[in-house]
Image (cartoon, rainbow, N blue to C red):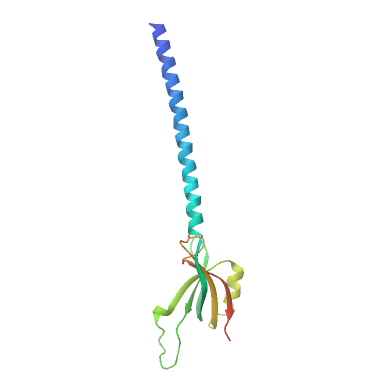
Length: 142
């Protein structure tokens, strides 16, 4: 009977080793596919969907966030006249600013007529900004 038990024990051990090897392979493949899918999504989300410029009066520019500090702003794209002092909320464009150097350049133009150059992405990540529009350059309109 002891010989039978040894053979049985060896068979169980070998089956356990094969199962563990197969489990490790499956986990490695799933991990690799997850990393590739994550990198693919990150690349797709950062693709530029459109780019261009918008002009108007720079209303607001701030650095905000609890965990991730981002630069956010608002541009009023309508025409402000004393006859119609109320600004239409539909003409306000929200944007994010990429980088501190661009933020400092744009900050000089707050309250003035500016042209902002932007790139629109498919998605955004919390550490990049609140909007899909990322302003990278500004110029004052005379």
